Length: 415
Ligand SMILES: Cc1ncc(COP(=O)(O)O)c(C=O)c1O
Image 1 (tube, protein in one colour):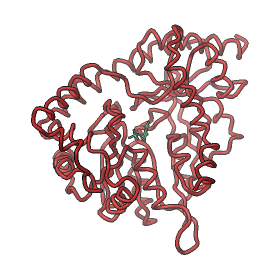
Image 2: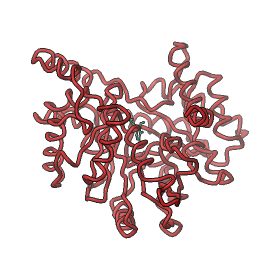
Image 3: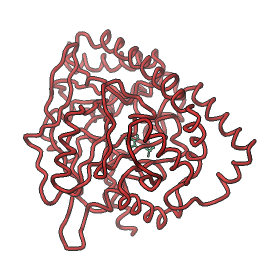
Image 4: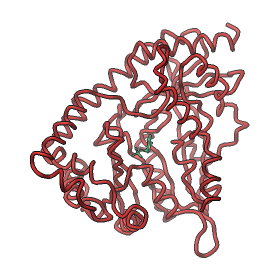
């Protein structure tokens, strides 16, 4: 056991990065520009609603239940029923509470799913998870209990107007062999803000069904909550889809609530793993959200508070980007969802890990892109030319950080 855990901890570049970010947060340095990290923004109007809901739970004697009992391993029953009804109404599905299992956050869901589906098989074969569109969420990279559990597909790059580009699934290169246990993608995508189109998703769904493997869709930023999505995207589900949702990006990462919507065989597997590993998933998120979903307050929260907040931030970020990087060969991925800008510094003469270190010395924290290209050949220069920026920061911080980044880039490009 020790050997395995130590191996994991040593490998993970992202752990080092998270440690840096944690130290930076606690340093309180006056020049600090924290453009890294995946924390949702503190949105006072949302926090006020969560606070009021907690007070209501206390007033109605529901608080005792929330903290005082273990839920079943599937997660709190009435929340799952309310959520199933809500999703059926919103999207015209026909799921029941039995298609829903809760976990301690999506990160936890992926650990269960990947290791239940892939790795060493009882028949001696070895199966992998396919990420059809790289770059992809870095949190997947270290979640396999076996080595080399993930394969990725290099994207096509479509150049757009206004110094923007968009990654597209390269179906010509996508090989789904017998060794693939599932296809998985985040939509909207962390780190790029991409939203894989309805047509691309339908093709992936078809491929998954053809190969009798699940299609896992990580909907941490998508509909119906937190709904930080600006592209025209349908949310579909079928018995072969594993849809993973989370309460984190609504502003509740501390409640550690992941939601897996899948066929009953998969939800039973998740709940069996929850039973073994944590006895029961966290009850806090479910308790807070049940009434809010039932009474339609969730719709108000996402449509009138969360989505407009990030939209305003994004508009400001795009404006600052266009001003500060106008003379530099820096492109932005088309921001269609989530709360990140993904910048491509074309022909950068150093790696983005080196650029990260230079910026860190000037109290500007971004996330270098290398680790998001899970399993992609690092000799592709593009893997070392991208940065992720969290734009949920005050605009003046964003501008200050961008100006430091632009100054470093001018030196590097000799401009
Ligand atoms: C795409 C994506 N999936 C999953 C997660 C994990 O979220 P949770 O807090 O629910 O574990 C994150 C967190 O940043 C994410 O960006």
